Amino acid sequence: MAKLSAVNKNKKRIKLSGRLYKKRQALKKIVMDKKIPLEERFKAQQKLSKLPRNSAKTRVMNRCEITGRPHGVYRKLKISRIALRQLGLQGKIPGLVKSSW
Image (cartoon, rainbow, N blue to C red; front, side):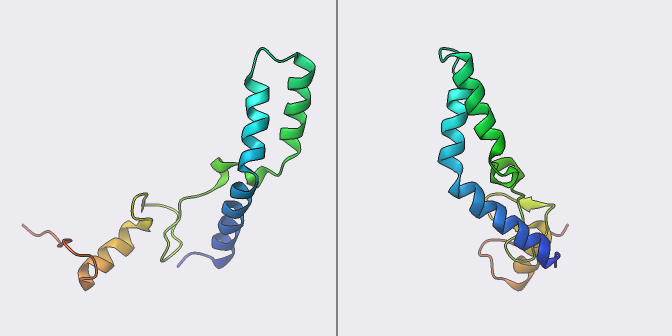
């Protein structure tokens, strides 16, 4: 089980990035548009830099929904390889069988 503080911090980042997503995208669009005058683009860049760092989508870590483990997480299932193996051994995932040869 991961540290609860790390899991809570990641949840906070997810919520913050979702809330400020549209504002961040609008400012990025202004900054990247070469047709807009340089002064306006610079002002948009300053507004973008004043937004909280944790509102960026790249700050969010993929974590296991069950254990909170940050590494070895399957994106599609949102669980770690270890939790997947445990659920498979318990027979809770249909069609998943532990291989042996």
